[in-house]
Amino acid sequence: MKRHCVTGILLAALIFAGSAQLSAQAPVSNLWPLVLIPNGDTVYDVVNHVTWLTDADLPARQRFGLPLCVGDNPLAPCVFGSGIMDYTSAAAWILAMNNANYQGHSNWQIPTTPTADKSCAGTGATGNSFGFGCNANAMGYLYYKALGFQAPNTAVPIPPNRVGPFRNFQPDHYWSNQTQSPIANFDFVDGSQGGGTGGDFSYVLPMIPNKIPGTPPAWGMGLQVNPDGQTVYDPRSGYTWLADANLAASDTLGLPRCQTPTTPMNCVAQDGSMPDSSAGAFINNMNAYDRGAGYLGQTNWQLPPVAAGCQPLGCDGMGNPMGMLYYIQLGLSPGTPVVEPPDIAVGPFLHLWPYPYWSCAVNNVQPPIQAPCDSGGATDRAQFGFSFGDGYVGTGTLPAFHFVTAYYVGCGLPELWCSLLSRP
Image 1 (tube, rainbow, N blue to C red):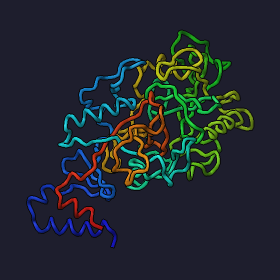
Image 2 (cartoon, rainbow, N blue to C red):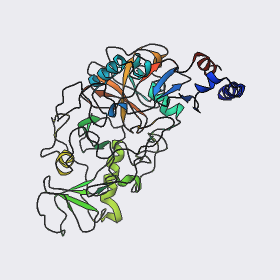
Image 3 (spheres, one colour):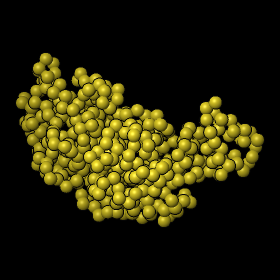
Image 4 (cartoon, rainbow, N blue to C red):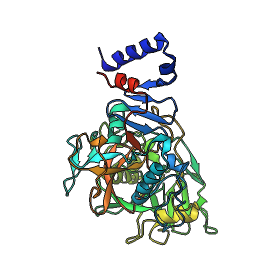
């Protein structure tokens, strides 16, 4: 008999027996192996014996005294209004949470990632495991095993949306035309310019240099929608954008949908994200569309350029059209997502972002999910992050911004319930 069946029978027997004290404190939902604790604020992972926050973006609602981040050079520790923050702030938020004895516990921690994980698809130059399939880390266990997702599928699909003249914008990274590694990208969650590897999954916002011939003359400096409604001219940058900010979700232009992160070659995920090689193939197919006439009759589509040497936030000058679009034309401030994900339940979790979350490194400690964070980090200048957007474990430079959740080691239920839930 399966383990959860045995436990279910034991739980049912106790409740039927009418133990008022126990039944009043019994788990109110059993989404095996995640058991929602009666307060609704925490959920117990029966396999790894840790208790998670059910609010996967608690910092957006409870900063524990940390100030709001302001401007494009915020002083850490601080938290942006969306809940996103850098790693220094994440550590400070956890410390403040413990000082507040939140939910009666002072042992909350950042979720861990082992530096060596045989389930990972890749190994970095410093020997750290990374990539897809990593399930020995705390959040990878949730994504792959407890919640049952498969990479590169998102845990929270973004519904159709409108942002100014654009539709279907994604709160995540968009590829640039840079070819050097790490490949530069622009992030429409926080307005940062960063970098990724070719195996990462990001989105594509195609553009055309200059104004499309035959469209009405430019006026003013605001975004101008062309008559067909399919393209948008930005007179500040001098580029014409595709109005559909995630065309690949509805039309892959001949590229196959991904079965795994690497197969078939040059594939596109169901949500429209894709690796760098697929982004290049997607642009080529746009230009070769309709027997060479080009998508929307244009044959000079390209990925956007980026400005070299930019600071992470505030890159809105010439040479960085995605930054100009985010900061100037859409009027967003640093740390502000272009859209927010739907407020849906993902298993027992709420407010989950399909985006990287900070994770701390642990080195050769078993079991890794119950270990405290190593002080040294993944590298001298980076820490691990896990994305619920595609199931990817990577490292983010410490000036980067991720979301934060937490757990504590132990069971938040009465001892008898904990022992029954943990019984094979």
